[in-house]
Image (cartoon, rainbow, N blue to C red; front, side, top):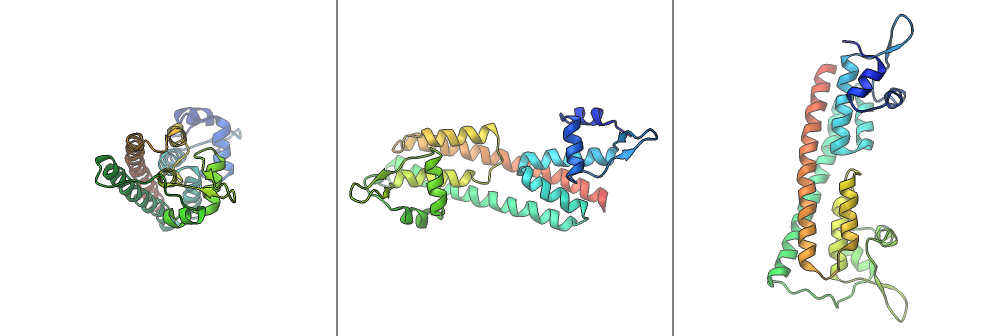
Length: 232
């Protein structure tokens, strides 16, 4: 079955310009040409578009571009390893968030005492969270949190509540840009630092987002594997 650019683009909620852009960037195979020179797309192009949309939803457009370029070079195994790396990353982020939820729960239930009066330097925060100091400074400049300043030397001072925020931000660092992730980061920014109950609820919202993401990634793998089978 052949498609004119407008018809195929509309089927996937795209513009004809986007379709041509995908072709120019090598995300889909070159269009065939009709006898009068018009672009004509086939079911093969449709399979590529379906795969692009599925991977983009679960892994983001940067990963999608890497994968589709691998397919274009017939590097099928490499395409699979790219998405596997991101799956492993998501699993690590979930494990980190699960640990944070357990800690917040222990604070909430009183089985673990918190001390928001204890302060840490940016070096200590980096060591405790694994976040680069440059990233911590960037997140603060972006308004995600504000550190106090030491009166004698003006150095940044962080407490345990800042660590909670930073660990939440880390979980979302590799997330696919969307309205949902923007809202989650805004919620982190507006979170009252010492409100454990609200921190727990926000962590549970982030957990729900990760559960949604793994489903989208599984769907993406289905479309990717189907396309790879067609290319073999």
